[in-house]
Image (cartoon, rainbow, N blue to C red; front, top):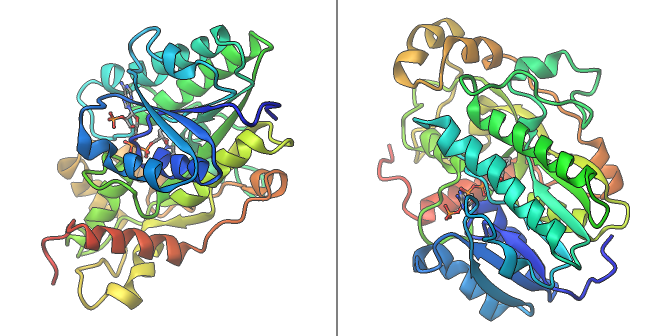
Length: 355
Ligand SMILES: NC(=O)c1ccc[n+]([C@@H]2O[C@H](COP(=O)([O-])OP(=O)(O)OC[C@H]3O[C@@H](n4cnc5c(N)ncnc54)[C@H](OP(=O)(O)O)[C@@H]3O)[C@@H](O)[C@H]2O)c1
């Protein structure tokens, strides 16, 4: 645990969906937060952060930094005892995965962690990794021991061609451990969330892929049925809490699977039916796998036959015991997470088409 809990802390990618809640949590506790953003001039991206800085007891200082610019994080990291590295592109539909995903994820991690090596006073780095660095497909979790995949597992099936986002997160986390093992000044703890949902703090557009999925459940795109894909789900507020505890709990060490529920998209959609089923064209049943195999690849290139075979109607299983025991983290119920996300989207006018 960092000895100097009074020193400022750094949060990279502070404009992000996950990072917003982490900044809020830190400011609530009175920390001085050095928040890096790529384009500080874009008011709509940072307005919620400025508001938190004004309202909450801690102090917020915004710095400009880009993952791909060497030395970019030096000024923001100065004097910090904890570095939370959350910035990394989270998008599934890309033209050039090397340029759009792998480079910013891996070079960004190198850039931030190598800067931590040069910055006296840094005692702990908390990296936002992902369950995507543990598995690619729900079928990978089927081969796991009873209780599901654990922190001992690494993703060995993603590639530049197949699930490049998962590949980017795997390469970035592996690189982070290499850099961490090469020095003794700070220790590394990784938070590995599954699919994150829950309300956002942003006032403008939310870039996280999390919202694209939920949007399709509510806008009628999946009215005829939803692919019953096995996934893990966790609330964004619990992910922020996990980061906080990873930084300040003495017992925190290694990787943490941060996933509350082993579930699938049909079960997620069903959480919404009691409250929203009459007003929104929500899916009520699963699409047959044979139909998805037939039309999936035509509708979306990320929906390849291989991906459908390995994920649709395949239960997902990861084991979250390490974080619940070591960091004493309690997860929110699934209904609360899903309803709060959907209500946020309604309030922000995400759905133009209600049935
Ligand atoms: N959401 C999930 O389901 C989920 C699950 C597991 C792990 N994660 C991880 O959580 C972290 C945050 O994701 P999120 O869901 O909060 O997505 P997000 O809202 O899109 O946040 C991504 C952040 O990364 C920043 N970023 C991207 N490229 C950058 C670059 N070249 N230089 C500087 N900053 C850059 C973005 O800055 P701009 O605002 O300037 O674009 C943004 O602040 C990521 O590491 C992601 O892999 C997310």
